[in-house]
Image (cartoon, rainbow, N blue to C red; front, top):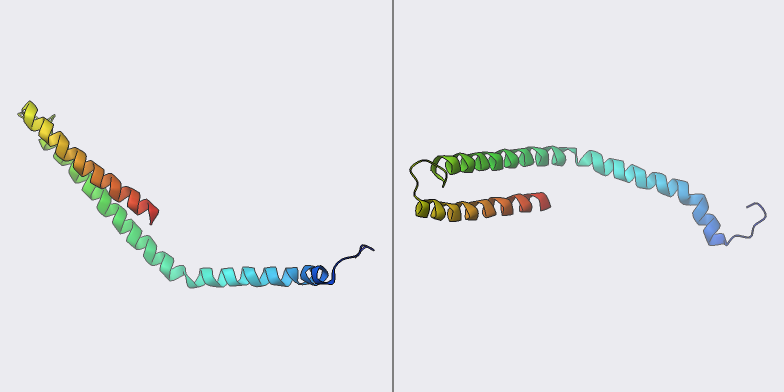
Length: 103
């Protein structure tokens, strides 16, 4: 190589690098093609989970405004107790959201 002494093992590695790289790319593309159905199923499940979570949050919001501490006819003590309940529900929903992001 250009008159520079090179270790025989390194020269062999350099000569086979292109074919090794192509084999790696081919393997990755093959695996990607095999996972298309799995990715589609995962997308459907994820969309369903997101829709269910959104519906739960919407229901919680409607319930909060209809029966929460700011609704008409709710006493201060009842509103305070409702706030504690909603904080627990909100923490559970937030925990579910965080778990969903990790998966």
